[in-house]
Length: 112
Image (cartoon, rainbow, N blue to C red):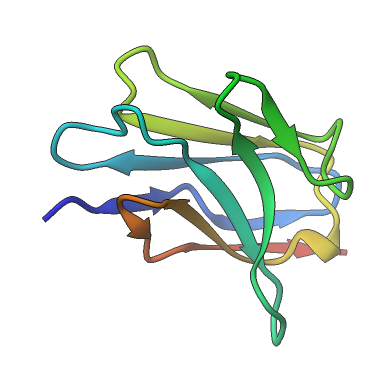
């Protein structure tokens, strides 16, 4: 069964950085376009970054300029580089594609 597995979360002080990874098992992402979502404590999931069909990476306004999404050349792992982290960035981060569904998520906690 093809799965998405996120990693890289942790506890960081405000202003710090983390890099999250999402690896697609099996044959990798292939032509599927990965998305990153954020679920703050007690709230709904919302997207933060996603690859479009044109190849452009789109960012939610709340993370634009601070987060960078990328993909390795083998299209097996996608990354979310998070800089200048804020307490509002705290929550669980998920990777998603329409074909793979959701990963299990990785917890990010930003202390003030």
